[in-house]
Image 1 (cartoon, rainbow, N blue to C red):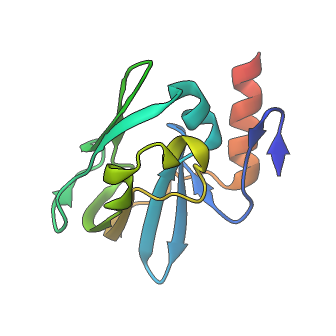
Image 2: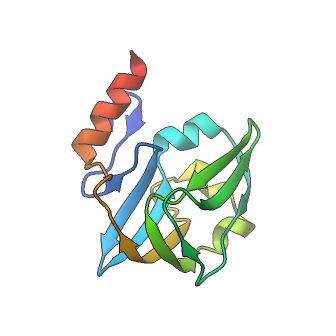
Length: 131
């Protein structure tokens, strides 16, 4: 689904901070949205968290450096880092080129996922940003 100039994928969940989340078998795969990717510009570096690290909602999940700024991605919930995508360390530009095809981390032991938006709710959020 396209919402204006930004892509919103059906079947994913979203945060108000512009991350997408795919939930499968209690594992939450997280990446950045098309909107976030375009706002950041060309991505040059990604600092990933340590596998096995316990996170609290709001903790620093990772940092993404682009030509425009350093962006902090915060954990949307209490969880544990199950896996990190080492490929984004070697090729961070993949987040700019294919934000929905490039994941950053996989989370497990997720607590309180009530703050997530479905694709229609996220599309409405993007609408409100154009105002």
